[in-house]
Amino acid sequence: MRALVLTSFCFVALASATRAQVWQEDFTNQTNDGAWEVYWSNYNQIWAGGGNPGYYLRLDTTGGSQTCHFLEIFPTSWPAGFSGDWRAAGVTGVGLDVNELLGPTSASGEWRVRIGNDNNTPSDTSDDCWVEFVPPVATPQGTGWFAYDFAVPTASPTLPAGWDFGGSCGVGGDAVWNAVIQDVDYWRVRLDTNPLAFCQFNHWTLGVDNLRVVGPSHASYCFGDGSGTACPCGNAGAPGEGCQNSSGAGAQLAASGSGGVTQDDLVFDGAQLLPGQPALLFAGVNAVNGGNGTVFGDGLRCAGGSVVRLGVRVPNASGQATWGPGLAASGGWSAGDTRHFQGWYRDPSGSPCGSAFNLTHGVTVVMTP
Image 1: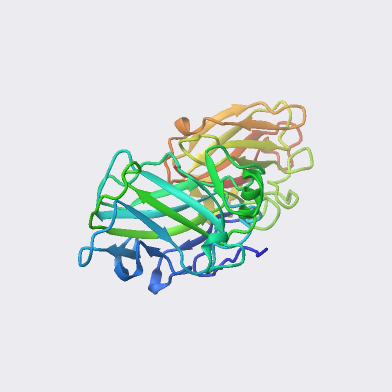
Image 2: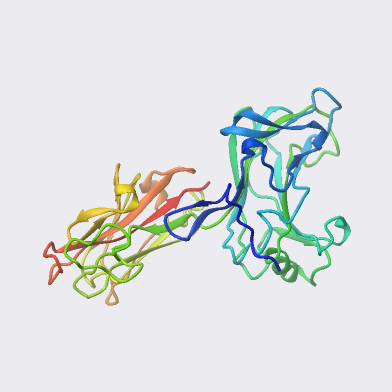
């Protein structure tokens, strides 16, 4: 089993070890990790401009023969930066950006995503194991760059509903699913504008950019543990906490869920708050002071700019409170937005600096479709 390879030119990190991008190929300066092709390499070129942004992989059949109404977008060389144990890497999905400049369109078109293991024989596809699914995502309906992201629930120990499987690496869907997800060699995408037809001939001009494997879309930052801006009166919390409150601990804020706007399953859990004292969750468009925060009350202000309040909770006897799911409507965010979240709470009796209020550390979330 291989560890997931993370190549330096395409790895994007947030403020903590949590990743939003596990791997990405944007073809900058003619790179092509995995030697990706669209339909056939004879009709492929990497263009230096016009992508999303910059470089992109372009299919253009107008100077040659027509092909069918469906296309495969696939790697031809691995192991690559996307190969390895996707469960251990916390992978949550795959995606790509597409611009259909010429080609068929259909309201009934579909995407098909396949993830495979080559059974240690890269040149022989007959013994591959694979899992695949058809996500409920529309295919392109016109020109212009569009981002497509497809959820892959790698943490699931069983074959997820709606997924298909095949190959010889296990008996039954659950065995194949676990064998593939924990040792991925490749992934590929099929764009089919008419799944009910055999082959309708067309010319295509299609751009592909930002092929990606994504991980958790949220990351903690702006801790009151001395790693950034100092707490106001020497009241540093333990590692991973906000500034210390009257309980002797610093409050924490954890995000769970996909960050998907459609699923709207984002949940925030506050811990080490003050039992019975109101706590407010809020979101902003900026990470204050470059993500280090500034002194505010007994703590640090980590999130700001176009602030939206997402509800007041009264923590239980253990100092815990929960917000969500169902936050997207009141939050007003869209796919692709980045929001910074933080909890404010009252600390009226014995607050270390005498301000009678404090804050959790911050959490950054990148919203997905």
